[in-house]
Length: 423
Ligand code: IMP
Image (cartoon, rainbow, N blue to C red; front, top):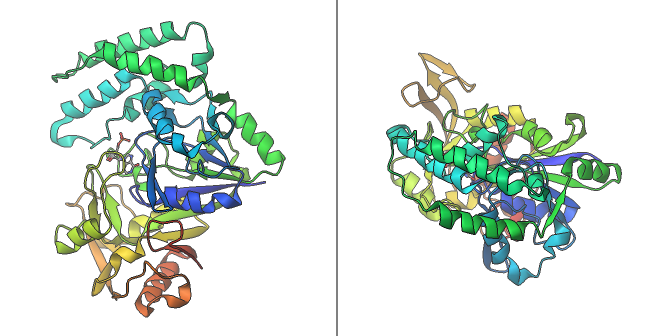
């Protein structure tokens, strides 16, 4: 049985958590393949909002198995908090939440290194969530990291000490004044590790292989978005993992030939949190309205998100790189009330009009070229079927499908599970 993928196509925060939750009834296994507690996947049902960081978004479904794959980085302290926040749901975590032994651990000193690195960059800072993501992936590729499976070894604390000591000396190289109490951080860390060890660790690539052979339906859940991909995003203002489709293969051990459908999630407009180029960013009342109506604040950091018009150049690029087979458009309801809507269909770049994403999309290199469309006044949040779409929303969707050459299968018109229209 093929493994389906679900990915964000913009700068993250597209609404992946909601869609995984909506789709989970069709799957036996939900597997996260990259990122870590920098992610904030928001789900809403029965009038209550839930934010997940590392735990896959299928956790609220009794029969789904949730896997944290080898490509994910785990902070035991945040993981423990996440589990504690879910206690009221009486979830059988031991049975339904399985963690890859090959997933890497975020140490307290990784978080400190992240903070020191960002502080030392001044204006050029990435705008990291400061969860230790970059330093942890650096240790992974530098072949120094600690993995979940190490926690099963008798001498894991020795390994921990050697790495943490090394990190402390590295922090000393940064010319920044970083205040911290490592003893206190470590006491929380060691206590959280003991809780983590009560969960089930697995060889997830083998588990997933056997599950595929047994005909189980598997959905791979991505975090962040394609434009934050370490290779294909707006480098260096990106995260430190492959957020694109290929990341699911390396982050779960699934063969490329076993990938089935690729669901691409995008917002009807665009947002970005943290630093980095964003060609269609708005600094006017329209941008402020999107932020206010769309409640555009980071689910992990609470930072306000930058807002702008939909960038089809970037979206096409993401569709192409990921091989998206169906699209899901989120937050169409936020655009209700705009008289005119703009869609960026090309860039002015070095005196030319181009429709592909160039090497550098800094504002001094790129000016967006817009197509204007009619807006719609109707409140979409109560709609139940595509027949109720206002004409101009239908025209917006038709335009996008024509440009992207991929069908838009779901139109989401609000944060609740129920506010999901299948086409
Ligand atoms: P890091 O992954 O925390 O180091 O952050 C690197 C960049 O990715 C920053 O600009 C963050 O704001 C952004 N980022 C990381 N995770 C997310 C996410 O889940 N949603 C949106 N942006 C994110």
